[in-house]
Amino acid sequence: MAIPELQWAQVNEGGRLHFKQIPVPKPGKGEVLVNILYSGVCHTDFHALNGDWPFPPNDPLIGGHEGAGVVVSKGELTEGIEIGDKVGVKWINNICLKETTYCVPRRNSLAIPRTGHSSVGASSVLSDPSLANRMGTEYCLAQAATVARIPDGCNMAAVAPILCAGITVYKGLKTSECKPGQTVAIVGAGGGLGSLAQQYAKAMGLRVIAIDGGEEKGKMSLEELGADTYIDFLKSKDIVNDVKKATADGLGPHGVILVSTSPKPFEQASEYVRPNGTVVPIGLPPDANIKASVFWGVLKMLRIKCSYVGTRRDTAEALDFFARGLIKAPYKLIGLGQLQEVYALMEKGQVLGRYVLDMSK
Image 1 (tube, helix red, strand yellow):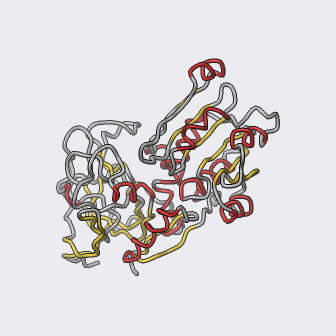
Image 2 (cartoon, rainbow, N blue to C red; image 1 turned 60 degrees about the vertical axis):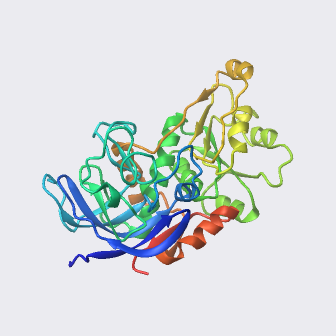
């Protein structure tokens, strides 16, 4: 296929989105150019747009880190991947190739500071950091060794959210060390990560307490996503007691997966998780703190284990669950020009499931 010189992108400049054309990058050594067909819209993109983190975002900034597409060009030293391959470009795009999510050099899709779009520690090895790994565009660069291989037969629009949200919650559930038959509470259950977390938890044999606000999210959790119990924090007068009562023995869930976009749940989870239970913070709401009583934490032998996306092995496992038809989280297609509308819904807490950008619209 002919590769254009320019492409459309949503560019954040000065805290505002601008729908404009930018150059299409060319791959260097170890890189591939991916024509992004679909890209999930993550709440992390919204945080970056707002500058919610404890460092300023790059300006200009192009967000997006759940891209599913096709390899259309490649540089040298890219053995094992061919033009036409279906691949996913993830939050962590450029790493040391060890099975870890924290290494140097490492390249993320958003505004972790250093070079280009993001990098922690040493400079990125991508040839053009300023144009790399941006799924708010039609084309992006990726490290050939770390792109996700999308299994044959997968719906490319539906698989896009798996490439960040799915991998992230799957890794979080593994981190909780919950066993089949045990109970996990998922806080923020109706959003993009939460809707996938419920599905992965059920596929892993866990009982699910879904926690969120609003009847619509409750209906989706119970009727579509397989939750065993739904707790509406907007109606609950005692969220800690209600969560404990939702478990068979009243001791609370064995694990808590925190994907909420609000700080309050991060302060409550340690109160209702059972003794020897594990609290897993994943979401990144601004100014949030993990709160736990030292006295009761010690007596309960509480574990707090933060989880950060997933490795290449986690990616392959998460995609395998999807390919086998076990993950069918809800999503809605929109055009790239409608991105600001999704952010407005995120700000109001009105997102059900995942919005996915259709780059052809």
